[in-house]
Image 1 (tube, each protein chain N blue to C red):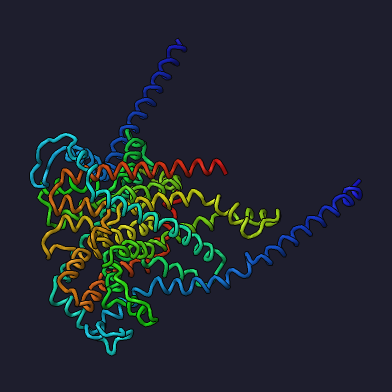
Image 2: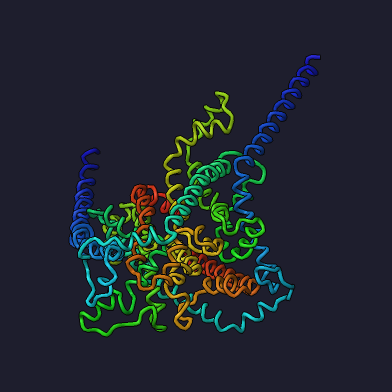
Length: 312
Length: 302
């Protein structure tokens, strides 16, 4: 008698507990989706749907206005023979090569200087970050003026010290380098701030221990600082690559891809294809090639970074 | 026994101290501590001036007449504050519309992201709901999808929605963002649970807990999110350039680029326009610099 009663109450408690659990879980489901739903819907809706749509578009001859006909892989076949695409590709890679190593090294250098309990650090950080924060479009216009062959201050300066005036953004062999310099100027502060945060995280004891073991300034830099901040270097490298692969604003506001396509970048080319020449299908194909290329480069950078860190 | 120990310990301690003193001397000699800070200014000062000099030049030029700008050798300081460039921009172009449009779009983006990103970030950090981990991974994965891949279909979506050439086309994609959700998510993960639990026990609903207890304490994270969103929305050029075709609906960034062709020698007006475009974003940055730096460095570490 007593045992059955006992069983009944435990059963009851179990069901009550299960019921409560289920209710809590259901209320969690409702609340969770109510809170996160709008964001999830917008972000995923505006990324994965267009991504699939772009894949389909790349198989059509859509001209943006009409959806076009299915033409299979013809766009992809055409882009292997596209000299402009090759040019855009080369230019984009060249920008990365011109900017990334110097951008990271200089960023680390300045961050090291700022990490010395130096005075005026707030002032310096503000100065370095202003070009990063201000709009790239405005900066493009500004540097179009500064490097203007006729009225620009740079040519005036060159002339003042007796050097020949340069074409800069109007010279096919100089324009991309000038853009890389301007780009360096816009991104410098970001690299500095990120590196500075990483340096501040290195425990002082580690550096002191290295000193006690007889490490000099350089060996401390190479054997303690550089390996410790390697993850941040990889992050900045990947970030820089993503950013260079999206290089548009500066080109649009200065050279529009010219002169002689010397500053044509991949995104500028995609924009032209889709919204100027209305070859949206082909533009989507180029965008997909860019997407996979950048993905491969990023993964390669990550793998390289990881292997390197293990090796050290 | 104890004396023996002390005897053994003494030379050891002396050696230890000597080593530390030697290391300190070496550190001082190497200049790691002492010289670099002072020498640092020799590099940092000119460099930081170079970083802001273009903006100084922009402001100076915006107050010059075109004949001053075209003079060879160039004028460095304007003779008097010529405001013709500014009046040209403000009175005989659509600049006031552009500025207002940019304020509307950026303001809407900030408000929407403060609400939507914090709600979503809170849900992912705190509420166990079906599919939450998959959704979070998918959201973060979208960071790998470059906008130029999705821009053509995005244009078509907004075309079918009838929003092309309206500010709606600019606001909707900025209502929320994966980065913003991630920022708030990592903030709420490090947020003490006890306060919320107390609120729940006192009978508050989840929304009440969120609104009355969590949000007021999340002010630092919200400030960072708001600043980043404003700067990003204000500076965007690529999407507005595609989505907007009529001048009065332009944002400042798109409007500015139209100056190039039109006023090709009107550098004074162009520089006045770029100066006016840069001011709001610089104000926001200067006011919220600390939060901005915390957010971008925190996002990297987290």
